[in-house]
Length: 146
Image (cartoon, rainbow, N blue to C red; front, side, top):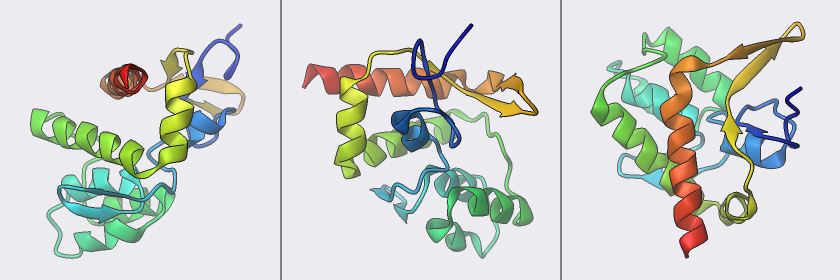
């Protein structure tokens, strides 16, 4: 049986570990990246895939608010372009740079990352998030080298 916090870290806003919650795109962890200031990675995620003239509202929304607003502005939930992924990974690095507590937790961690949701006591693995888990692992390795 897999146990979040014992044999892995679930990167999920309702995960069992502080680090898993903080690495979630929903976490209120302000950062500044090449496109400016954002409150959450989720807001930036939808900002990048949005062409609506009101997309700047996504800079200050909470994680769940970002998802709702992004969908209302007709943003895509998942974008497969290499440019999109590269910008998200750079923003992840900025999030760690701008949030020293998360950087410390990440550097001190060693458990493998997973990403899944739990609905009605059933686990739903997010298959298309593998690249995000790989990016967090790469960032962790680089932090440990410092």
